[in-house]
Image (cartoon, rainbow, N blue to C red; front, side, top):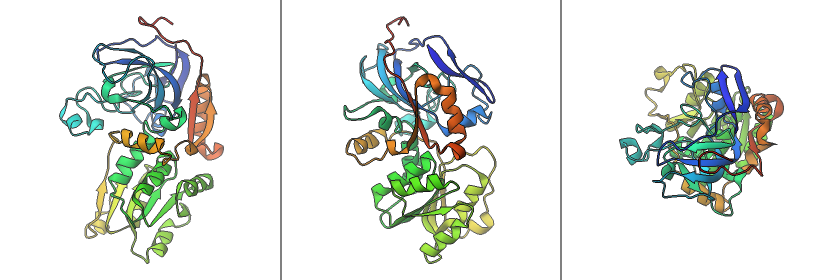
Length: 357
């Protein structure tokens, strides 16, 4: 089969690799139908996730068809359409018992495209299948469902739920990339009073308006003033950081009101200053987290009910074998206007037991 293989910083290629085999009785082999690229994949390519070894197939978000299952898999069978969660869960360790699957100590957590081969391939081995894939309702389109593998649960769990968004709240979302836009869309579940989106790119601010933002601000034009103007100087009840830079984090700390909540979602690769000399007396709650994906069943229900504007975030479509071109487009989002990319192909033959096709 072919897959996108990481060779080291700034180097990856779409190439032939061995077909995956079942390694454990809880594994499944899934034929990839639709896959995407995550901002975290770009961090890996830049050498900012040093535990990813050269030779690893990248990717952790996909929809596909089960073609083979291990003897202990009970939740799916060959022929089922499934969403592959970005998080794998052993189901037995302390954290899995608490639904904190992202912290799994039994061999799971974020492993796809990080410590084992991932989903940017024609086929993938999925460990711990019963807790790590989700059968899709017949009405769910692949491109919509694919976005529930990572960005929507990340935005919902780490941003909206950790930030305790509630009715009437003023919510500021700093960063209108895929996760920030998903945070705006899922914050709407809780009837906030207003949502303010902050970003550098006009196209992303336009997208924020489409998914539910009531006001937008250019990140270079004092967005804190807009928040102050809209809240009579109080600040936002909830601020969601969805960029992952020191500057954006510090901006968020200045936007949050006394007693408010700052939910950090962005992936930080550099230290950020926490100005406790200004925050110590404000009763501010700051949360961080890796997504657990426990919310995927809820989000699938919302998708089936037409309450989730998932595919509106997809700006570019490619065939699977154009993976390298898709990476180039996604990495130059400021120039290309890329928000989320979908890659998919059809009519690839099914894999049979033993890896033959």
